[in-house]
Length: 304
Image (cartoon, rainbow, N blue to C red; front, side, top):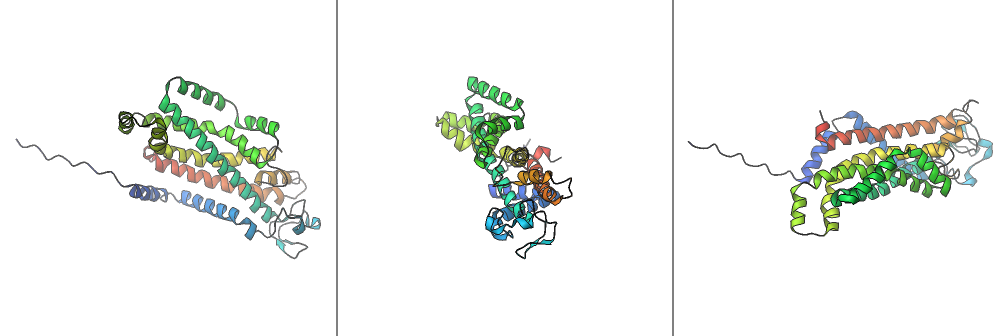
């Protein structure tokens, strides 16, 4: 009796085709596309703030104290129109928001890059080395995650003082454990695969197995966590600035602008706090929409 012909094995798809398929899945969700467009516009506007802002809110030569507390649509002493009004120092709110968005995004992105690199390295090393090293590292991560993030950041900033660099340092200390736990879980799955066994048979150096073979295969979940943590870093920095422990007053972020305008809310000067708050909410929602869609695209089991 003749045997049925064997089904030929499917060749793996090239990486370019996989990226195209993932991009097609991403744009299937209109809300994710809208969030991505909003995020791209926010990044471009923040980068071009020195050229498109009506004034430089840090340049005292461009600020007139007589322009303070002007409502939206008022004319400044220089003849320009303050479409979003001015604050208590006479700064154009539109310019202050653009510059503040630049600081908030730079803090969030820089924090994620540094914390992600540290956490990913620690997580991959813990999964690959195992044993006591893994146990000690994961106990440190569990202990770190047991404390509220805002409390750790406040303690660090109270010790080191205010400043953009100090805020980034505090947020990196707060966030690295999230990446370490995520990457360690993904790396544990990868260490059981055949290519890791082949590397051990070939007796490749451990550093090469870690950074050349294991870590690149743990990037998809890392991208999802990093996208969400950008929003978390921006929110945490805004909270710290609102509490007066974040960036200095001379370089206000969106959180600092909200903090400065909050005291004028009851007197009817709503625009000083509301407009920066709206910008912050829109950016956070856009980042979360993109991150949620990336989580589904990069993990097919969640597509249902």
